[in-house]
Length: 270
Image 1: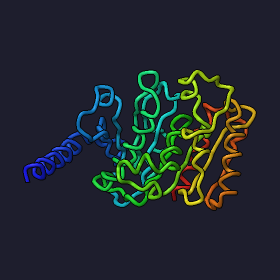
Image 2: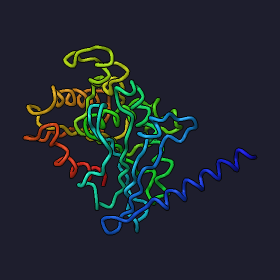
Image 3: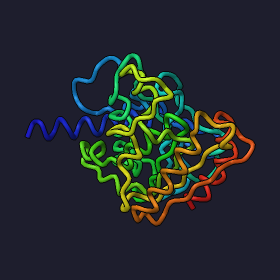
Image 4: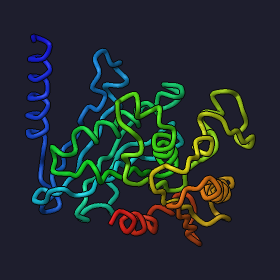
């Protein structure tokens, strides 16, 4: 009984904290910052620092769609932010920080990403969002994390969330073989491709959520990134996945491709 009351009190305090932390920006959107998404007891100092997210949500609208957004940076750097192209679009943006290498090793960043997605399923209704309309996206390393959590169901299952509840995966220029930072942890050269349990390509399945793959120009992308994604797209098709689309953005390199990709992302979410 005491444990039940304690949990109820924690939930009330968390709700009050979220309300007090809200501020209105963009003339009608609430921005709630620094929310801790690792809710289990006994988290580390690194988790307390990095495992935080911001929620940007329409203030006067209900049952809107949400995109969980993971920043890029090779799993070694980067900070959460709300992409300007996703502001004022009638959707919520949950933007996430996660622990970084070399401070942690794999799979810590995947575990963090899964915890952030699970947090969103649990809490987005508190902000007015529809838990049935949660999309997961990111750029580069963030795109890799989105695919790992959406395809390998074990990460979200640890939080009692079925990955198939994700409304759609929208990776922008993802690594679909084993990520180069994970290979670096093992002393493997960046030019040596590996496909193992830490590769989205390893977890292709026909019943995965709908996927919108977007890359930059194949001649301007990072080390064959378009070609990786083209093979990933082809194998999904061969596996029987019927809702996969691949876009190549001619003329845009890896760093500049998100800007023209965002309108495609928004269209996909409609």
